Length: 180
Ligand SMILES: [Zn+2]
Image (tube, rainbow, N blue to C red; front, side):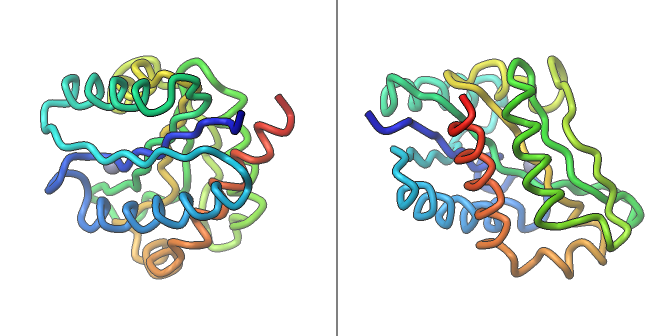
C-alpha cells in the first residue's frame, strides 16, 4: 500500500503571518503533485476552526478518517516577528526528531546559508506554540518554519519559490521514508 502523507496548511482562514496561509496553500498544492508523482498517497488538509486545540483535534480526526495508516503529517508555516533581523529556518518536532532532521538536512542542502541565513536545524517542541499539532497528529509529525517573512532579504529570496520550497519538503519525506 502506498505510504500515507498528510499536508496541513497552518492557521485558520485569516490567521497567521501576513500572506502565510496563501503562500502555504500554494506549497501544499505543489507538494501534492510532487508526492503523488513519487508514489505516495497524499491527503491535503486546511484548518477551518480558530480555537487552537479544537482546530488540531479536528485535523487529527480528518487525517485518521482519510488515512487510517497515516505515516507522516506536515504543518506548513513561515515565521514573522517584529524585527527585520531574525532569519533562518527551523523544523519543529515532538516525537520524531529523525523526520525533522531529514527536513533540516534537505533545506540546508538546497538553500545553503550563504545569504546570512542561520541554520537553526531542528527544534524540540513538546509544549507551547505548535505543540498541539505535533502531539495530536496521527503520524510522525514535523512543523516547518522555513524563513522569516519579516526579514526583507529572506522574503525577497523566497517569495516566489513556492515550488522549490515544496520540492525540498517532498524530497525530505522521500529520503526519510527510503531510510525507514
Ligand atoms: Zn504560522
